[in-house]
Amino acid sequence: MIIEAPGFVPLSKTGTELLFELIFQHYERGPTLTTSNLSLDEWTVTFDRNA
Image (cartoon, rainbow, N blue to C red; front, side, top):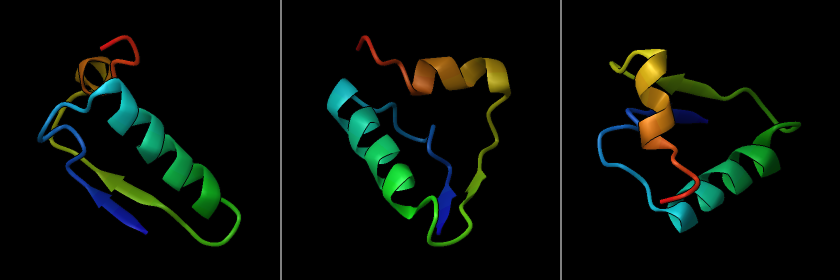
């Protein structure tokens, strides 16, 4: 599974929970690759669980 540019559009709390559920469900079935042009410091804004 390839997740490209997850920070392109900030995710809502529900969107973040659904993305993590997708990754969790896929975890033992195959590799997951995530690409982003954001620095790691900016990922906390993208995946803000309090939004």
